[in-house]
Image 1 (spheres, helix red, strand yellow):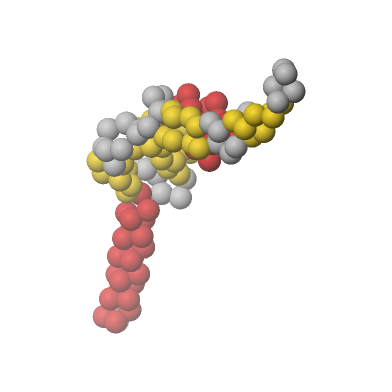
Image 2: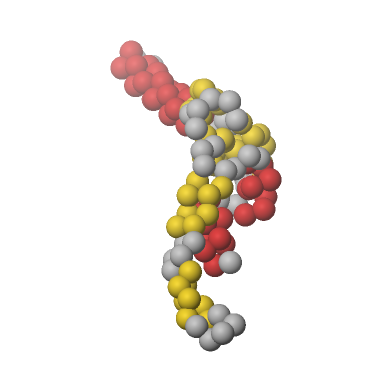
Length: 119
């Protein structure tokens, strides 16, 4: 085997190792929770910020915001008991305190907002 083939092989191995390393690292910010999911099943719930590791190609990470979330609901017209039309404008504020229970109950943040708007 010549020197050029060794260099090419080493370069390919180095590039593949860099890709695997890059896909195994993720960052959790101070304002986030993270759930590590392996094939859809929760493996780990992370609440502390920092650089974290996961299994590449097997694990996925879902993030949830620790901060207070606002949801402005659409204006609804309802009929009162005395047959008057009332326009109700509402909003809700919520905070996720347990990301594992939140994920098990509603899934993602978008699904939770959709359920609140439909409810």
